[in-house]
Structure formats: C-alpha cells, structure tokens
Image (tube, rainbow, N blue to C red; front, side):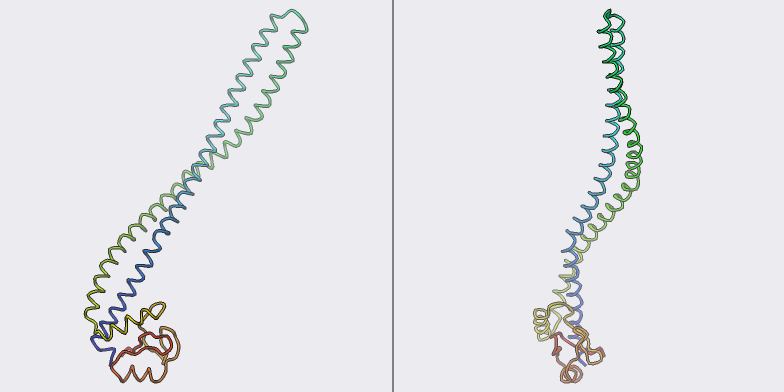
Length: 238
C-alpha cells in the first residue's frame, strides 16, 4: 500500500511542512497592514482624547477672556463715575451716563456669554475626564495588543526560517519521482492542499468523484496517482 511506503510518508511530511510554510508567509504578508490598522485605531483614540482636552481648555480660555473683559468694563465704568463727579455741565454728565449705560450693556452681554461658556465647560470637563479614563485605558489595551501582534510576527519569522530549513532537509529524503510529481502539482493546482485522501471515492481536495481507474491505481499500484478532476495527488489512508 502506497500510503505505508516510507518515501510516501516523507512526501506527506513535506506537504504538511509546505502548507505550514505557506500559512506563515500569508500571515506575515498581512502583518504590516494589521499593525498599520492598529496604529490608525490607536491614533484615532488618542486624538479623541486630545480633542476633548483641547475643547475643555478652549472653553476655559474663553471664560478667562470674558472674565477679564468684564473686569475691564467695570473699571471703565468706575472711571466714568469718577469723571461724572468732576463735570459741571449737564450735557457732559449725560454723555458719560450714556457711555456708562453702554458699558453696562456690554457687561450684561459678556455675563450671558460667560454663563453659556460655564455650562459648556461642565460638559467638556466631564467628556475630557471620561476620555482620559476609559479611552486612555482602551488605548493602553490596543497598544498591548499591537505589541503582542508585532512580537508574534517576529516569532513567526523565526519559525518560517527554521521551517524552510526543515523543508530542504525533508526534500532530500523524498523519492525523486515522487518529488518531481509533487513539484509539478504545486504549480498546476491553484491552492493547497496538493495531496488529498480519497473518501467515498471522492477527492477530499476538490470534493469531486474520481474515476475507477484512479481508485484502482491508488489501491493496487504502488505509484503516485493524481485526481483526474483537479490534479492533486490522491491516496487512501490505510
């Protein structure tokens, strides 16, 4: 039985290692984009924290500016009051009174603006505190995930290099005829597996029924046989 032949067992071992090698190559090919995606997500989260803090600071700055303007306007009113004590003409007094009324109107406007800003500050402070807490924790978790992914990637690279060496050694132990057929199959079959057991007279690689000749060749003749549907090397596990 071909399946029990040591050379065929070596070929199965080669096939197993080749498949593992391809999976590692695909995984490593996807690694840069995976890391870039995590970096983008981390950056978005960090910026959300920065934006929340910037909004809070901006509102605090607006409040401070309004506070200074109100103090300045009150100083101006005080000066105008003092000037009223010095003027002797009614028209000059009234002009100063009008100016004081205008300044008081500005103060009222600034105070209304300040009330709105103070209300916004409360919301912005709460948002910033949540951002600094939950989002910062989420960023830490994502950074940890990213570092682990990068670390696994380095491990996979080492594993791949070691596996390539094992594949070269395994190939040396495979019968040249078997190896030649196997290499040809890897070129004509679009994706692994390149070797597949037959079950219920179906190739487990393409899941199509194989001919009686193929089954007979596998069971009776001690030679490599290919599926007459997909071209994969087929065998019976006995």
